[in-house]
Amino acid sequence: MYIPSLFDDLENPDKDLKNDSSKLKFNSALLEAKNCKKCQLSLTRNNVVFGEGPTNPEIMVIGEGPGEMEDLQGIPFVGKAGQLLTKIFESVDLKREDIYITNVVKCRPPGNRNPLPEEVEACRHFLQVQIESLKPKIIVLLGAVACKAILKNFSSITKMRGELILQDDQCFIPMFHPSYLLRNASKKEGSPRWLTWKDMQKVKKFVEKES
Image (cartoon, rainbow, N blue to C red; front, top):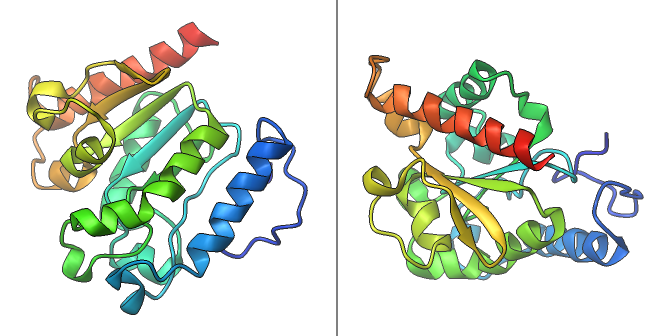
């Protein structure tokens, strides 16, 4: 399966995107992102981290922004948080390669700080194109930053995690960010890791029901 990356030949035919118009918009956004200088993050990045995964995904995952390893490799979620995310997928028999993964901002915020509002806005177009072009059955929002950037009525990740939310004909589910789970290692019933496992089970069941 053809997987778009920072190093793609943009003329490579992509049969997985929903139609030619979606493919054109997606590839145009990818090229624009690689050369983007809309905000200050462009001054300190090593690589633009646009996203990784199939172009016909049932599940899409959105985090907040690239970290150090992601910035160096140009691939989302490859550090410790990414390794845990992969294990979360595998815990419910989902394969990472079947899931499209991206972030709210495509360049690393210095020191892994949260992206600033103007940085989120600078990248909003790219995220909108990804969502509209890929049309996943469900989008997992990892952490408060991703939820605030996308959901119109967001209160807190603790209150809204695991809730299926329909917005603009697209289904979303907020979940704890893997970096938070790294700081909370307990797997006891009711712990953040246990709740995340239950949430991912819900994601899998939703996809199976919609298939």
